Image 1 (cartoon, rainbow, N blue to C red):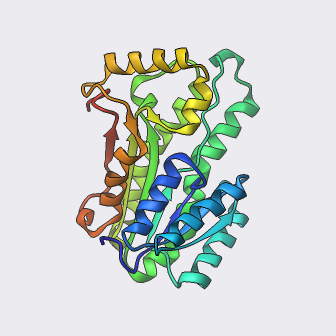
Image 2: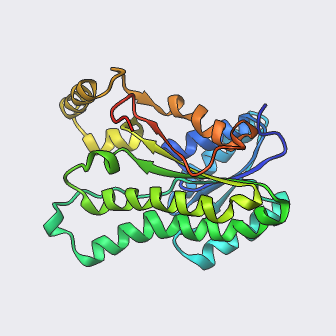
Image 3: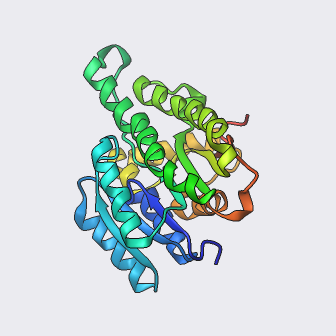
Length: 254
């Protein structure tokens, strides 16, 4: 197991991508804080699944864009597990709206949820990672930053900001042996995606589109992305920082 004795916080871990990462980290030996905001029952199910597999986890409710709530989450992590080694900034929203119909309030909400949250969480764990001269911060971005996808310019802008934040932060804290990297996700087949697409016809249309743009013509499942997060969370990536790794089936290459 590659994360034995490590402590990880995964934001937005009640379902979908965050859930898959939290469970995989626990299977690899990490104690995991399953962060959630509104879905307490789902978060409890993730914790239960981890414990049933012999792992160690707690759930913690926090709006990760709220500095006070994040500080409470970090305090609980330290009280429970004694330290924090890994932070996965996964929480985010992706509302669709034509760009000129986006209000200032819409824009600020997306930027607060997707970008400020990553800054707030990273800032909160930094003193503990600095003290132990070790840490791994993994920020989640999206392929839409590279494609300039139409239909949600505020979301695209937020995911681009995450790449800039990742690079700058890596330079700021690398001297403390804290790695900061980003994973740029393509279209991952999750329950959230299926819920948004709705009908089988819409799902088939989306699949056909992806098969046309991806070099590897298959839908990406959450099980396909866990290994990359594990790599960046483990000692195998100790000299990798400020980087962005695409997991998109070869949709965009850079």
